[in-house]
Image (tube, rainbow, N blue to C red):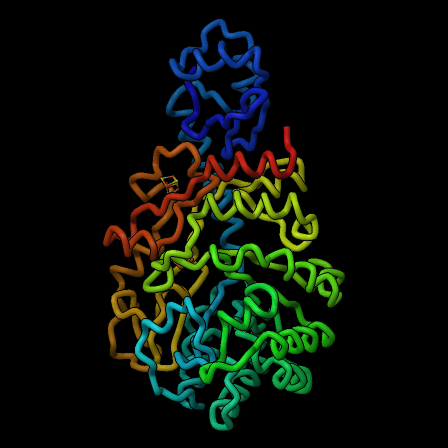
Length: 446
Ligand code: SF4
Ligand code: SF4
């Protein structure tokens, strides 16, 4: 018998938690058993150990490498089947222009671009995706992204409406990532034109003062009230809102105020079918991650927990995932193994109004990640890079192959990894064990 390479322990005050995301097993090792267990665990010697059969049955141990590889193959096939059935997200960056100038925005690193969305580009985009994604088992959906995709100038708006109507006629659902400033004006149009809206993601960064200090219009105007009115408008029309908050050291203390605001507005009462919140850090991409205000991942969640203990409204506002521990708390079992957490070039593709094709939102507009063109059929695809994106998972990234937490991590973000190492097939590690430990404590498991 030997230890499965996916078995790991998490220390708790009153003992150890033993976990394996391949088999889905979670067990508590009491304090008085921990010493003997750890001796076995560290030496990987299980002969005559009284719990050996239990550990084997639960997948913490395997007979040998061959058995482990068979188990991996079986789980990988299950993961791939499930993955195959996930709809592809086609992100269309309609413009790189924006009506905001947020204090931390990475898109200010891009040269503003004056390619104007027009019907010819839109027709080429739909012709391309109709051919390219024809074989998908699920209908792909389209996410509008920017810059700011809901700009209000007449020419742009006409083109965007043509885009939306074409998507509707071709039966594509639309998600929108917007700053929310013009939502009130756009919401009735979505309804009138019967656009199939999957979700609208809008950002509020704290209470009014904090938000208005960070997310101003280009001319320095306040934006909080107008965005909130937009959220009201789309919720009333029955569209789903994903409220995103970008957290850093400057604004984290305002999160409970935002949560209370959402409660007072009645937004939390819509339930998760219509209203969800996402709390995130800025990416360590390009310029946005370099500010002194950026939290590392672990500290951000530690601070979130402290605040949530003092302000229970936060617990209703947002339920962190903690690498599958929220799922464990709600479903009494671990989620299925994640062999791949980065959908770029597989379940996610990105396009811009210049006709360029990229792997995802993080690479859109960045020359070295350009994969081809949907406007120019003669331009060759970057097949070498496309293959790297397609093959990137924890069984192909060297560092992930023997990482015990890999099936709860999935290898991290390919663009961040590649920005650091120059290789798409490289790891972007997260403090997975530490976050799992936080999650076990936060959700009071075991
Ligand atoms: S490269 Fe990063 S941002 Fe892009 S899909 Fe992968 S994980 Fe997401
Ligand atoms: S990215 Fe790092 S933490 Fe994640 S699976 Fe790979 S080696 Fe492990």
